[in-house]
Length: 187
Image (cartoon, rainbow, N blue to C red; front, side, top):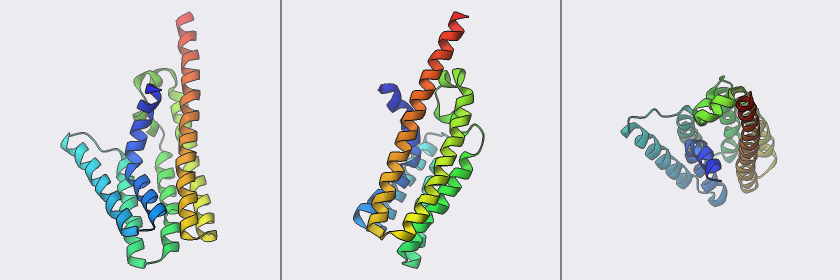
């Protein structure tokens, strides 16, 4: 379990401000509060990395931009449909970023990269596919549901789909990695 939590931490950290923004907005309907809290978290995370002189991951920057752009556009337009459709564009941007070969390597321990580097690349594309699927689902739900129902549905989908893919990927890569390590040791 410790290895699983350790593996999940970087991805959750990178997407934390986006997750916070959407959860606060979905459950309270208070856009200004959601934007402020999401931006505070994003700024704090990025500032912490910069203070430690560590590079800020692409997904962390994207998460901050998502909160800033979605929230700002919603505040300016006062149009809830705009807010609801906007995540589809963001999912597409994140999906496009995830089409970069090897992006997932940053999130994997050296041992995984030693035994399953091909799977890291393949699962990177699976993650991109999930983002594009989420974009399509969001668009359909944004046009079909009210703000509250859409917010709850997309929050549940976002968390559940990413958790399911993460757990499936973790288990599959661990299983194949162990088999390959044993085969290499036997040879």
